[in-house]
Figure 1 (spheres, rainbow, N blue to C red):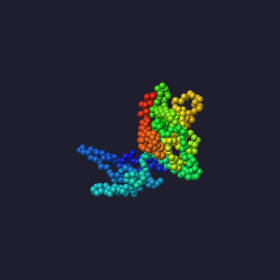
Figure 2 (tube, rainbow, N blue to C red; figure 1 turned 120 degrees about the vertical axis):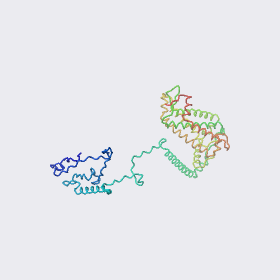
Figure 3 (cartoon, rainbow, N blue to C red; figure 1 turned 60 degrees about the vertical axis):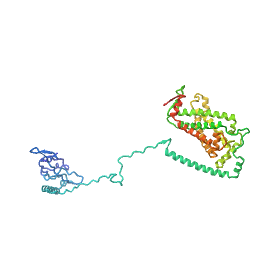
Figure 4 (cartoon, helix red, strand yellow; figure 1 turned 45 degrees about the vertical axis):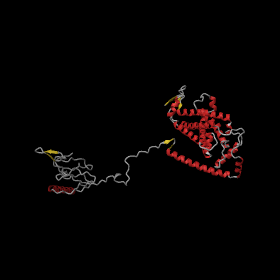
Amino acid sequence: MATYGTTIRRGLPRVPGGEPWPPGPEGAAPALAAEPEPTAGKPERGERGRVEAQPEPAPVEVGRAGEDPGPAITASRPVRRGLPRVPGGEPWPSAAFAARVAERLAGAGADRASGREAPAPRSSTVPVRPVPDAASSPGRAVAPTRRPSAAPEPERIGPYTRGQWVGAALLTAGALVYAAAMVVLLTRWIVSLDGVRAFIAAYPGAYPLPAGAPVGIPAWLGWQHFFNVFLLVLIIRSGWQVRTERRPPAYWAPRAKPRGRISLSLWFHQSLDLLWLVNGAIYVILLFATGQWMRIVPTSWDVFPHALSALLQYAALDWPTENGWVHYNALQQLSYFGVVFVAAPLAAITGFRMSNLWPARAKTLNRILPVEWARAVHFPVMIVFVLFIAVHVTLVLATGALRNLNHMYAAKDVVDWTGFWIFGASMLAIVAAWVAARPLVLAPVARLFGTVSGR
């Protein structure tokens, strides 16, 4: 850095082959007078030990916008001229400009000496417009300073969210109502035909039972009905849980075979299956011992045209006359026969085939009853039971609820509220068992028959 009172150091030439810049002694700038560098606000000690602050000369802005005006210029310090703006031109700033600056400095010095305040010099700097923010410009969109975080993933129940399940349920319900309405309208038109009316007159929906068939429903049949519904509902619940759960909450293993462990849900499902089979065996034995089998086992080929007639009457909402205390109509008889003697044995056989009780080394049995077939049949059988329960309960309530409930639960053929209250108590028991069927309650019971572990 050059100091005042020294000559300017010459540098490289501006054109190839020229002399160094700045020019020689005849064109060189005069030597600057030696002057101590100002101490910006630095105190100096006076003659008597006083501390005096040396004032700093005010700088003057020169040049164009965006250019550094260089060191502060005072009256005793002339404007330093630099490089030319065009090749071959004179140094910048021009001599006239330097003279005007010197005049302005001289005038400012005179004003300060007389005590007058000099007008502020006009700055040639370009004002910078501040960037508006969201608070000062609410109507202007401002780019965010950071990327917004992604919305959290909604909780799913299986493949869908709660809202999607609700929407699917509403859409399915609407489609079912529409389909049912179309079926009723179509069936009413079919029933109005002359040939169909003659068919229904010849086969009203029920045929007489064999001689010696019992009349009425005994009390044991009502209790069997309650136990069957109670166990079947819990079997459907536990079976669905076994099918859908990914990580069992606990495991159960027999004490004699610790390695043969299964999930606690599967243990509960199989235990209910055993109780249901015992209850079913008692039901079938009493059914044939008391002659009640004639109510649900077809005894004539007329059962098929009567069942078709009953189906047409149900679909047209002109239901056949009910007399369940004496006999069922043909459609009910076929339905009960199919559930008791077809669906229940299929559920028992396929469930036993998939359980750990099945002999794994029985090659002949495995070839006769493959496990793939058992898995393919077991779940559709459960769907059959669900549909049967839904239709059965709907028709019981729609075709004379008080009388039908008395037949099923109170074992009497009157119209009062006895059967209804027994039915209500049985529903409370089923709901309580449904809620209680969780690991906290099942684990202590399972420990009575084996070992329960967390993994």
